[in-house]
Amino acid sequence: MKLYACDACGQAVHFDNRSCVHCGHRLGFMPERLQLVALEEGENGLFHPFGEPETALCLCENAALDVCNWTVSADDAEPYCLTCRHNRCVPNTASHKGLVRWQRISQAQRHLFYSLLKLNLPHPTRAEDPQGGLIFDFLEDQVDDFGNAVPAMTLHDEGMIAIRAAEADEDVRVEAKVNMGEPYRTLLGHLRHETGHFVWNKLVRDAGRLEECRAVFGDERADYGQSLQYHYDNGPPPGWQQSYISAYATTHPWEDFAECFAHYLHIVDTLETARAFGMAVDPRGHGEIAAEVDFHPYRAANAKQLVDAFVPLTVAINSIQRSMGGGDVYPFVLTPAVVDKLEYIHRLVQQH
Image (cartoon, rainbow, N blue to C red):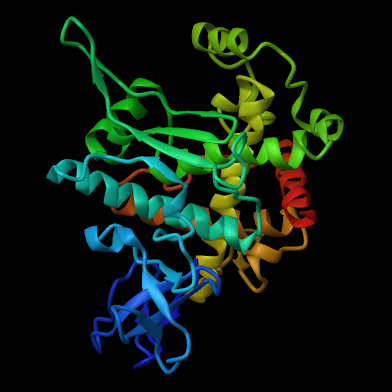
C-alpha cells in the first residue's frame, strides 16, 4: 500500500483517510488512477480533484454511511464505486453493530481491490459476467428451530464469495481462530483467499492452464468433499510444513492455490507499504537477515526477490510484536517448496 500526500497541502495521508487532518480537504480514492486525491466541491453535488475542475466525480453511494471513500466518474451510470458494485448482500446498516461490521468489511474489501486493480486481475461484475462474475454476500448468522445460533459459511462458488459478517467482530474472529487452531485469521485474509478461488477459475481453468497448475499444486479433480472431511477428521499429514504454507492448504489443490494466492497478496502489499515508508532491515552483525525494498513489489522480477525482502521484514516485525506482548504478525514459514508455488502465482498474475 502506497503512502499518499494531500494535493492541497502536502500532508501525508493514508489509503483509508476521508479527510486531511492538516487542511481539512475531503479525500477520495480514484480507482482509475490508483490515487488518493484531495477533492473540491463543484456544482450539482459533484466533486473534482484539487486543481482539476474539468474532472467531474461523484462519491460512492456508500460514502453516505461512511463506509467507502472511493469515487465514481460523473459519467458512470453506476452509483457505486468499482469495489462496492460487486456487493449483493451486506450487513444490516439500520443497527449500530451492522454498520460497524460493514465499515470494517468494506475497509478490508477495498484493500483487496487495490491489489486486484494494481495487478490488473480480472474482476467482472455479475452484470458483466452472469455465470462467473465476482459478487460478494456478507451473511448474518441464523438461528435454528431450537434457538441455536448457526454461523454463516464462508465459501466461493463460481465467482460468488460468501463471508460471515460476524468475522468483523474481533471476539468472534478470535474465538473461531482458537477453535480451529489457526495461527492467523483476518477479514482481509478471508477475502484474499476466497478471491484466489475466483482467480483460479479465470486464469487457470478458463485459460487452459490446468496441466501446468496440476504439476505445481496437484490434481484438483480429487473429490473436494471427501478431501475436506478427511482433513477435519485426521488433520494435515505429517511433515506438511515442508511443502505447504498452512495446514488448511493441505486439504485440496484448490485450497493450496487459494492460500498461496492470498499470501502472494499479503507479501506484495506489505512490501509496497514498507517501501513507501522507507523501511529497511539491517541488524548489526546479522547480514543474513538484512533487506531493503529497493524494487517495485507489484512488478518484482520473481517470487524469490519478494521472499528475500519479505522474510527479514517479518522477522523484525514479529520481534517487535513480541516485545509489545503480542503474537507474530506473520506466523508462517516460506520453505523452498512454498516459494516454488508462489513463483507459479507470480508468473500467472504477471503474464496476465
